[in-house]
Length: 310
Ligand code: BDR
Ligand code: CA
Image (cartoon, rainbow, N blue to C red):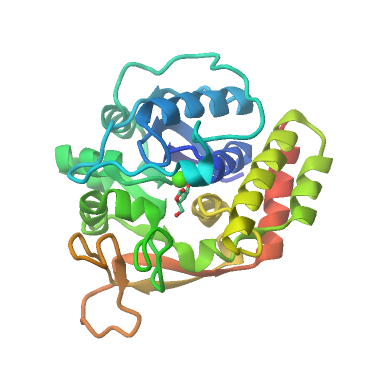
């Protein structure tokens, strides 16, 4: 039996963040040492409340740290059109059974990393504000971070502007800190996450598992599907779950190591992840970019994950 990978989940839940966390908690390959909220899809108050409710639902009692209330430099952007007014509209969730631990997100990350007997993997699925704050404050901890497996960006295109993906656009300065950190990065960008599609027959498979978590996940997927269909997507892209799948089922993914720069300025390209597909910069790759996924295997993974709950 392999020793589970110690991880910190950092997100702005959010339907797909929530599903990513369900997947992470279900896997014996991962050991969740902390959970941290970040402002992104909604305000920090709402994403923290959602994080507590999700952890209560899935039985995750790792310490939860409240994240930074705003991006490092930029003005906050929230996404109520995507995730609803609460940031996690849809099924009724249990009220929080516990409270945040008292340390803010970067401080909790710092503590967990310092106390860990082995390097810790970070799994950010929202704007990179907390992770950047940690790295700026404690650059000495970089060797104690094994990898950052993040959802963000897109080599080919954006979703919040034509060029930029939401998580990177919300805090481009933070993304720049992370992408220039020298820490091994896995980037689950739109190139792959928009192929990680779930259709009604898939969420009905999830629902048929029958337990409470399965029903809630099916409802989240149905909500997400409805929104994305209204925009013309064929299915629901479960973006954030790909950053977790990269740790537990890498064989279902196709990757390419690229040098990725973050554009922090510009009328059209602020927040863009500029990927050097043909090595024209001569710079060494700084990110393993996921470009494709075995969609059927991904759906099977989600179905198997919800089976792990009572
Ligand atoms: C990302 O933006 C958020 O709305 C999702 O949770 C995901 O992390 C996709 O662009
Ligand atoms: Ca997210």
